[in-house]
Length: 139
Image (cartoon, rainbow, N blue to C red; front, side, top):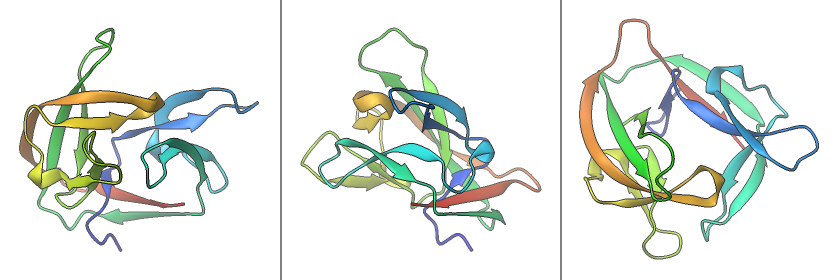
C-alpha cells in the first residue's frame, strides 16, 4: 500500500543500461526486480540502486502534484512528473535536504536525472484519473 511517497504509473525513470556506463529514460512500469536505476545518496550524489520490490496499487489519492521542471543546462524541453503530495524531491540547497511535492514552488532548484539540476517552473494539483495506479519501488 502506498504510504504517500509514490509516483503516477505514467512516470519515467533513468535505468542503468547493460554494461553499466549510461542511464536511459524508460517508463517506470517497465522496471523489474533486479533492474538498476539512478538514485541519490544522502549527499545527493548519483548512485545506482537495485529494484528490490515493486508495488502497484490503485491510487487512493484524489489528486497528484504535477511538478514541471526546466533543466538548468537548457537543451531539453520542460518535463513534468506526477507525484503524490508527500513524495520528496532532493533540493539543491543543503546536503540531504528534501522537499515534499506539495511544498514545491516555482523557482525551487532540484537534483534530477544524470546528476543535473532543474528549476521548478510550475506546480499544480491535478485530479487522479479513474483507475490510475501509484507505483512504489523499493531499493
